[in-house]
Image (cartoon, rainbow, N blue to C red; front, side, top):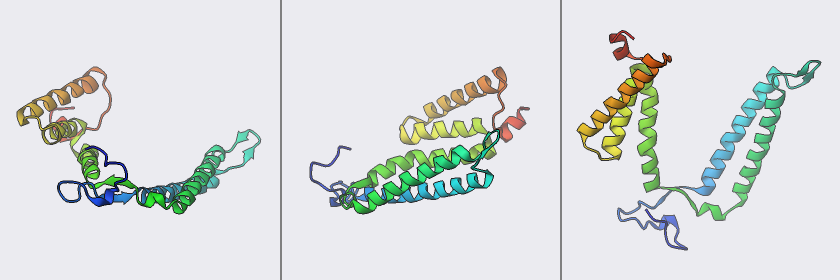
Length: 181
């Protein structure tokens, strides 16, 4: 999808489907949300490192010394970004992500999240088979038989490489247990 012409705002909805290019979130909202999240992370890290010790001991720095000051720097940068976003009114009109862009991101994010969850129960090889086959078939629009064959070869080659050749401990599921691994 090409960017809108100069001067057009994403809220105008130039998409053929009536709102594909409509902004889901403004850049200003995204900047504020990320700054607040990073500020919260900095506070959590700062507190945790303060708890473990941020002073200098006779044998050198305590465990939380350097991480604490890194969290202070992160907090300062987050505050700067938050203030800048709150004062910048032009960014309220700029789109951070449009509906069409968010849809494409979700096409990758949702299967990848499911892959991470399924790896816990099915093992990495079966989950990889499902992920690769799903991406090839749904996103790549490749024939189902080609997707299944390629995914099987990929998962089998991963199994042989990691499980048999290098003997690397990988998350296993019921299929591997059935095969005796």
